[in-house]
Structure formats: structure tokens, C-alpha cells
Image (cartoon, rainbow, N blue to C red; front, side):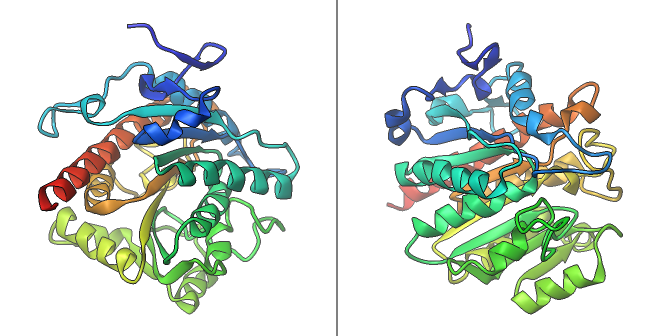
Length: 321
């Protein structure tokens, strides 16, 4: 089966339809994928290159079907129509302009009614995506944030919109219900005391890796988290940073130990989507750190578990109708 390309020799994610020149077809799709190849204006340090992730994630996805034998032999391609809208045209070193472009691009998808899945880029992309969602939502938005870190610094390297600050901006966003914002999987000493304090002051909830490990079951625990995120809200959004995984499973991500296993992560993703999400992102994958692109490959599996949850949620809604 030949695969349609999104640009150059890069295939559309999971062999979905190319929507770059057919944006009017978004409203006909259940799922719309897009990339945000952005890494802040300037980055110092040894972890850099996540702007390459949308391309590499797509390239890796060419290996896969949409079939998961472990989830009742479900083939997502039989249940969902999917399209790839390409990448946001970010402007290197122009932070404010890029934030506006991300907001405008994602806003088009929210208007279409499709379920959007964004590939970062750094975690700074989550703020403009959710900001655009709040403008299309009458009620409040709840957020489940899977990450090793809070990413709620008041500024990140002096940048209001840097990778370490999106949730500080979301605390300030009128359409987000802070009491329904859950920081999940938090662990490790790269967090600072003020991060936990800022979350508490904002009204957000924190559940650490220890809370996950000590839960009676991942399914029951996921229900508890979703109930918090959905209370008093109209929509629930899921944001995943790759470093919530232990570095043993995430060679293309920041080096954080004592993290989740792939099983733990995909199980919770599936449970949240089964209960009802409006969209999601997966960020902070660094292909140049990862010789075998294991982290980029894993994104396809994570997304398919989410899509299986979307199918399950829709089937449940239809059964109740």
C-alpha cells in the first residue's frame, strides 16, 4: 500500500489523508494530526532538537498499521477517518508571532469539530493550543498534564512562553478551571519547591509517580483523575511530555529516572480517552538524542491507544443514545 506524503518524502502520520491543500475537508474527519516544529527562541544545554520531532514521528509511523491486537483486535482505521494537516509555520526566534500562529492554526481545527492530536516541539506549544480551545468552548476546560515536571515556572529562561512555563500561563487563562488542572506523574529533583507551591496556590492538583504506583489499579486511579479534570468543565484536554516515561524507555527525551513504564502510560492514555477527551498533544521528543528513534516510534503506539479510547467513548455514547 503506497503512503501519501505530507511534504518531501515524509509520510502522513499513520497513512492518514493529506489535508494540507484540502483544509475544507477537516470537518469530514474524526481525527486531525498536526505538527508544531518549535523549540523556543534560544535553547542552551544538552537537550535540543525537538523541532525535528514532527517529521521523525511521521517517518516512524510508516511502519505501523492502526491495528492493536491487545485491545480486542481493534483496527482504528475501520472506525475513524483521519487526516494530517501538516505543520504550523513557526517563525524561528519570533516567539510572540509563533504563539499567535499556533493559536490560529489549532483554532481552525477546534472550529472543524475534529479531534486534534498535536506533535511538538517543546511543551511551550500547549499554552496557545489550549488558549485557542477556550475561545471555542462556552464552558471551562479541564487539563490532564502527564509529565515528570510541573512546567509552571513564571518564566522559562526569561521567556514567558518557554518550555518550562506553559502551565503558569494556563493558570492565568480565564477559560481554564484551575481546580480541574491535574499535574500527573510528577517526580524527581529537577522540580523545585516553588513549582509545587505555585500549583497549590493556583488550585491545581498534583499526583506524583508514587501516587500512581500505589494505586489499587490504573483503571480506578485514571477514573479518579478524570473525575477531577472533568468536574465543572465542558471539555478535558490531555498533554503528554515524553519525560513522564522513565529514561530507560525514553532515550529521545530528557533524562529523568523513576518514571512511568510504557504500559502504565498507554493504559492511562486509553482510560482517559475512553472517558472523553477533546484533544491531546505529545511533546518533548528529541530525535537527535536517540540513535534508533525509539521515542519517536513510541508516539504511534501512544496515539493508537488514545484513538482506541476515542472509539470506545463514541461507542458508549451511541449505546446510551
